[in-house]
Length: 222
Image 1 (cartoon, rainbow, N blue to C red):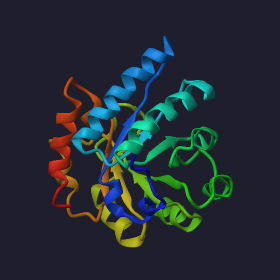
Image 2 (image 1 turned 90 degrees about the vertical axis):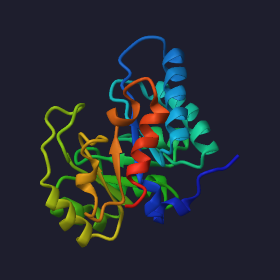
Image 3 (image 1 turned 30 degrees about the horizontal axis):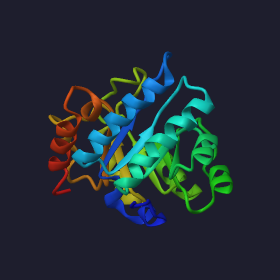
C-alpha cells in the first residue's frame, strides 16, 4: 500500500486538484460513510490530488470513524487527507493534516499539538492574511472566494488580481477556492496558483470520476 509521506508538504503539485467533501446532517452513519467512500474513490480515480473532509454537524467520534475509512482509501492512491477545523479529529484519525479558517484556532498551536509531520493549511482572503499565515508556519493556504460560493452564502469574492499579489509575496502553495468550475477555471491560470479547490465541480452529479478528470485536464499546463 502506498502511504502518504511528509514530502507532500513541500510539493506544490500535491495541491493541484483539491477536493472537499462532507455535509452530514443526520441518519445512518455507516450508510453515510459507505456513500462518501464511494465518492472519494471515484474522485481519486479521476485524478484528485488532495482531499479535505469538512463536517460541520458531526460528532467527533463519528468524524474520526469517517476520516479513518477515507484515509484507508486515500493511502492506496498516495493522496493526503486533510481535516477541516478540528485538530482533535486530525490527531485521533491520524489524518495527514488540518485546515484552519480565520476563526478556527492558532496555526502555532496546531503545530505544537500535531508536530512537524502533519500538513497545516490556512485560509487567507487577502494579502495581509496570507503573509500572516505564512509567518505563523502554514504549509499552504486556501484563498477565495474566487467566484462566490455555493456552500458558503456569506463568502466575499476576492478580486482575481489579488491572487497575483498573494502568490508573488509568499513561498508556500496557494490554492484558489470558491465557485470554481470547468467553465471559469481558465480565468485563474497564470496567477501563480498551485491549484484549485472544489466541492461541487468534483462531487456533484453522477459521474464524479469524469468531473474530476475534466478539471485535471484543464490544470495540466498550470
